Image 1 (tube, rainbow, N blue to C red):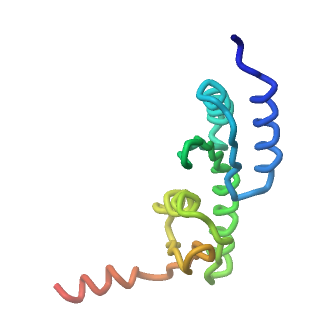
Image 2: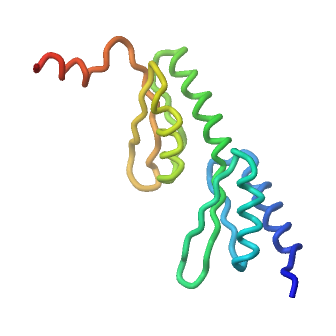
Length: 143
């Protein structure tokens, strides 16, 4: 029996509409294994999205993360930090979204990232670095 492609197309269309300008992942429920694989293939064709599966009781839920949008937002904030010389905060995010930000900026010169806040208010702050990194300076002084 052929799986219902309309259900898959509708799930993809709804997720793409939700993800348009969002840092929140789109949640897709009610798909069987074959349909989840189709949705995952669709989104992972580009570097814009990352799909993860989570088990919630008996149901498997797909989360589609807007990695491309998060990286563009991060880049914009990083440029503001470098130009203005003062810290900038990103909106509150889940742990995976914060990981994307930290990973994206880990090798960037002139800035550092730090997660702040608790629970749902946890967010990333991008801070400028001028001169030497204080941690490295302390290490050199203690030798």
